[in-house]
Length: 371
Image 1: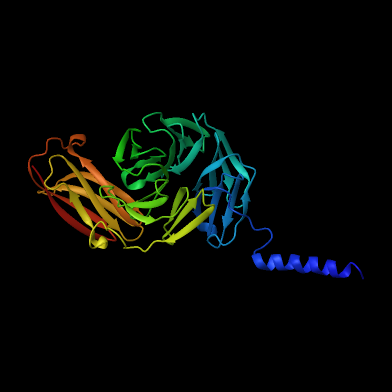
Image 2: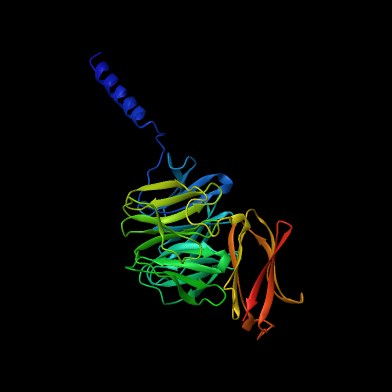
């Protein structure tokens, strides 16, 4: 009976500790989370952890985490493409089956520094950031790659996102006063999308309205740029130690922020309609700019649900000049550009012309002037 009381005390202490934490003993802890994405099919978020080489999953928005994959080397960027989770691990891109967690893709890329952010276009190509200042284009089907952009970025390129409406990539770097760069997917040309005084960027993402969100170590904040990137950014949230990868869940309008230094992932509910809108009535948005125009136009419009869209240009006699787009568009603001110098109708006569937009089985028409 001598040892009965000490043993009872030990058992009571152990049970008390478990109740204090009130989480499963198998629950995992974030360790320098770098990137996050949303798996809509399984209603979960996946988070890469640089500190312990694990990909963790959460079904309850960060209240608890479990292991999806582990044993990775310096895992940074993650990106979902169909049923595969792609992860950048030092100089390798690995692909994991979403259902089994098994590695089904493994490719070495000759990075100058290390591989970081990942995105993909509508054709299924991956674009992978090399922090040394390059972007690789990866054909996962044929397991091949090319160097899509080889130079022109500031040092420590960090993240990239696909801008579908403008058929381009947007990229950010961890450098003082770094701009947001754009890369045209048609010819891989590099240009500055907008100059900022923020810099020290670590992550970038977009919502369904084409607004752009960036994370910066400059004050530990998240900023939002409206779709044209023409207006000054608006602060969304702050108080982070080292905000890294971002992901916008368009299904639930939640912005997920991986705070590398704070060892947390914050899930921010975004209220649709707050902030600058493309128009007072987005449902009726249909604009042509500039108007009058000399030879180039930008046509912007809003789609309130996934639908077929058709955009055409006509002269005043009803003759077709150009078809800007025919196909399906997701919810959001979209833009198309037209240059008469690159069309069959060069040197158009000054006069009145028309642009028609067909969506939701309705046709709208806008008049514009060529001078």
